[in-house]
Image 1 (cartoon, rainbow, N blue to C red):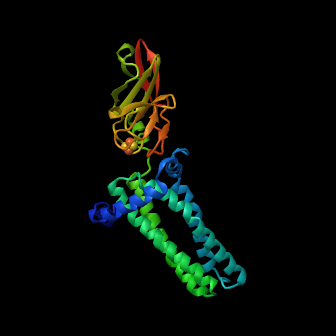
Image 2 (image 1 turned 135 degrees about the vertical axis):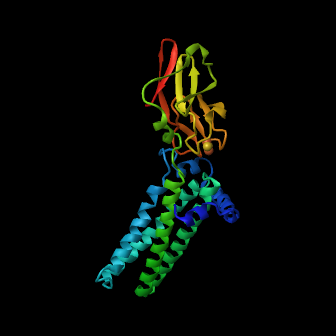
Image 3 (image 1 turned 180 degrees about the horizontal axis):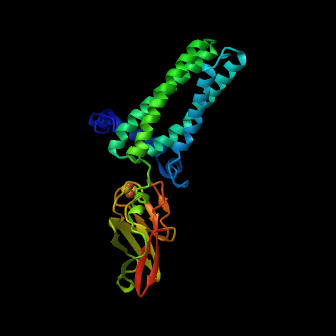
Length: 288
Ligand code: FES
């Protein structure tokens, strides 16, 4: 990893600003049902990476028109200004989905996200200034401003990639455990030893497995929370709309025990399930 990224992840002096942004994000895009939708829980994963495609694509297209010969023809100028305006307007949903994700991050991730947000907000300022310059008829200045904005947005995108892929922000931390479950069926326990209506905890390979029994039905989930990997066996069971659920002990995500469906965030992904069967009076599990 480049040294400056390691330093950025460890830059505690940023925490004061990161916490202030977290409060703003919580108040604007992180609350209740709206926060869940913006974060992407109904979709099964964060929406932000998909939503940013529109403004970035529009800004890139503007840059292509601005760089081509013939850029000073009226048609090309109008097309570039229209794309730039559409892309800048499309930054609103991108910002809201990003803020909803922001409240779910760890402190180390928030430091990187703070700079990611700062780069993108500054880029938006350049794009807005470019729109104004073009409207005044100063197209040369408008082009310079939007090229500068694109450079900043590119730097922001680089940090966004680091957040998603190097720091695992928004990743399903249960799914990453699944390949560690050895192939084939694994015997967990005698059926009679598994209490009804309680969370039972086992390990297969190095993977924690959470088992729930309701009469003669068994469900098994990866025991590491999809959000940030908390031990779900330490959570509490609760009833949500008639379904038995487990609430994560760290940040309160709620998963339906029968199928792992995420009913409440901050987890955007469902909890990964394992297959179950009963053989010779014993519960066995396997990868799906
Ligand atoms: S680790 Fe955050 S909700 Fe489970």
